[in-house]
Length: 232
Length: 232
DNA sequence: GGTATATGAATGAAAG
DNA sequence: CTTTCATTCATATACC
Image 1 (spheres, each protein chain N blue to C red):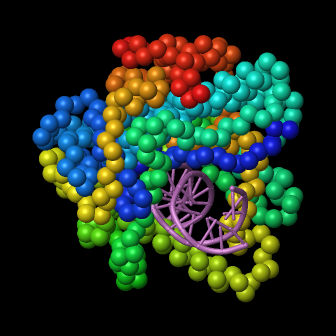
Image 2 (cartoon, rainbow over the protein chains, first blue to last red; image 1 turned 90 degrees about the vertical axis):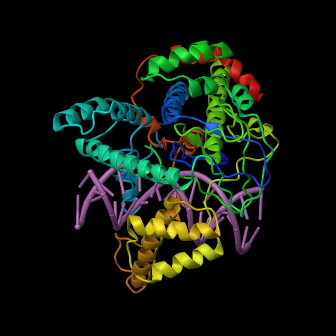
Image 3 (cartoon, rainbow over the protein chains, first blue to last red; image 1 turned 180 degrees about the vertical axis):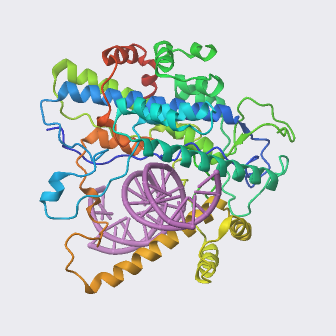
């Protein structure tokens, strides 16, 4: 049984992708030279996409692993896209929650890609197509797709305005210093850090590619392991 | 999706500001040009964490797979220890301690007061004002305010309905949703693990169709496993 | 040190 | 399209 576990899942935070940040981050208590971590929106977005793809790959690896070791049941089927779990119903208690559609990483990736293509409002037909395509990767309905774009658009817009607001509030050369957090931290060489971290990271930060597909990522993995991929 | 609001939160607490290195931009007295976007410390932090996490994931998966295929023994092999050292190796500081904004008592007080004034929906402009005001007492962003009201409203409502149901216990199928049952998930260890990691809330991993040849992918990763040595 | 709870944040869906 | 709601997730904190 593989179910033995200690749910010691060390978290990490899942809220990535927030790129509507301030500009010249707050200074530490002391002078400290200039520490500006520059990254364009495009780069950020790219990174986000990469991570998404990474997620997908890991996910699929997990599946592969599961299939390999699947001498056991395939239960544990999380509610995922199913609306009702009969087992729960049997227990005589509530009919289980989760009726909400949740995009699989793969679907998300596709959605994001389509969204990024800019072609704003997906027409009725387009939604149909998309739904159809995504249907290959998991349960999904046109409504889901529609809602997703609706939300995506709205939130993207809000983010943007918030970001703009921030820019106006703190002029680029004004080091906003909050007297509250003087917890200055030792400066560290971020470039160095990233380079040491993973062969993908730095590269991904600097390369701008319009389309980060699975194949693309795969190819990167192929050459990873050497920092030279940085110059890809 | 993207965090719609700016997430430059985090204020007091033992959060440490990382105002260090520069990525790809010359710094000087006051460098930042108007056209560059800059990452906040929090954002950088997130990226670092994510990258590290994903690198680790791949590594672990490879190991897991090897272990399994070599003897088909799925014993041990835990995926714990996620927040690995590389993250802190940078400057010897914990960088995992910062992410949730926490209102200062003063801010809370003000928020509560505003909330009690009844004007349910703060509206965009109002939020901006509030944010501005609270900013005097600590780092805060519009998102924080927005979320706070959102949560406050929702929870206020829930509590209310909960209290009104304490005299009606008969309905067997309705609400009375106790947050106790959230441990009923039946995921297998590492799937759970992943779900907690993904920035995209990888919720439906197993639903995905096992398309394209993965053995191929896996082999690629194995071969390029250089990066993993960093963690071992 | 392991749960239990409070709460900030994310997001699908629906209302307006 | 915009705003709000409902639900869920994750984390910080408290309690045992």
